[in-house]
Length: 294
Length: 291
Image (tube, rainbow over all chains, first blue to last red; front, side, top):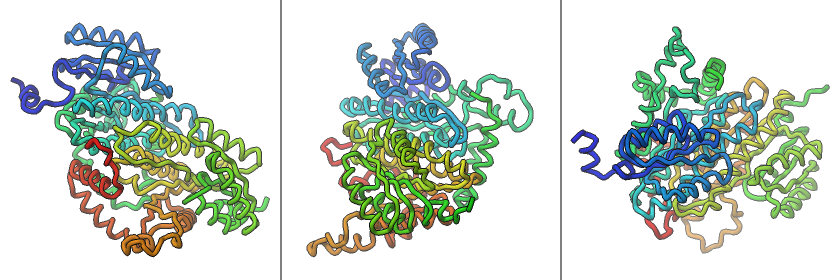
């Protein structure tokens, strides 16, 4: 038996055995796709969902996973920014007789910019997907899981949740929401046999962050930082491990940076709020100006 | 063009103007009264069903303090709500120096057994409406080179809140966004303060019967009142503070100790204790199924 099999044999972990089923949003690329692949690899059936315009890509991934791992892979193309999006998704899953043991809320948008000039509709759409759809979908599936006494939810947040981010203000705030929400749910669902995990990741090498634009090959600070981005595969693995271990939170950080995190966090607490925010404004303005436009 | 004194340009003194949401009761009413008392012209907003209450308050404030006081009854939970409020202000040629983002919804109970209607309002008002209103009213302030925003958040913002999951998360959102805005708007002459307010006692002290327990009376005497909240927030604005935390009198040192102990605990323990505390403090989660 591999270590992983030994662990799962000793303690049944919700949603990850062969024959289980997982619903993954934002599954057409990036972290969502990585989660879909990771759960399929573990022998679970997958319902992949993304925007209607991503439908072909979803189908291609589903076919690939079905062939490779012999699991049932179905797709549903839904716009989660719509108020009824989450409900439509559940209806589509029900029509497909697909009842997930694991729901991965990975769909997300990352609009940035100066708040007072940023496009309001874009910012609102980001709220509808990153925040409202996540809460709605969780609200639709959690009662069923509680009824069964088993199930798990993974919410993909971000290290942006841990501090305010000027120029990424609404994005970071939406992730702060997801983190607070998810941790509260973990505590509420302790005794119901349902696990809720929040995954906070730093920048990950995906289309969201300007994948494969050659920055990693550059010298200097930008290249250095880009080479340290997480991979989506690693994020997915960390997320699934966290479910197995019933951890409320997993933070996936750039290799090397992880060691610095606690001293940085502690030092931050000693700095007065105003100084902290001023420094944050300068740093995030630099990051905003230097990142690849998405 | 004569420049107004800074305090007027921030909407906290005569010559300035302020828009207060959720103004018909509680903390919102506290802000309305505090600002009127300083001679600030007002636009007060609340739900359509509060229109009469709002009108009565507006009349009272105009009589007492001689300030202009417009009202607008708008449901901010509706997606077009904030835009309608903006339109109402423009119709009155009311361009506020100060925006008080106070309107908010709260609900309690285990999330898995809570009907969506109980928490959708929190997302639509505490989060989305707050963003939309800020986006609609701040740019003109930036253009003028002066203005201010007060975001009424909660001490619930600091920790996840089992049995108040969506509410706590919405306040974490406001705390994050408010601070980011403070930083962005610094160089543009616009101040943003986020007030993290503990529980507020809105019942007047006179209403407490003689049969109220000694403990209740003790707590009530030390509780925050809407007036206290408003005054403290406006002072913080004058000092250009990004965040101001308000707790009942005497609670701050106790809370400091609790926070210190809490930060020494591993996350899982901390969350389980929060769940137990919220269940005990608020009787939340007592709805049959053990959550």
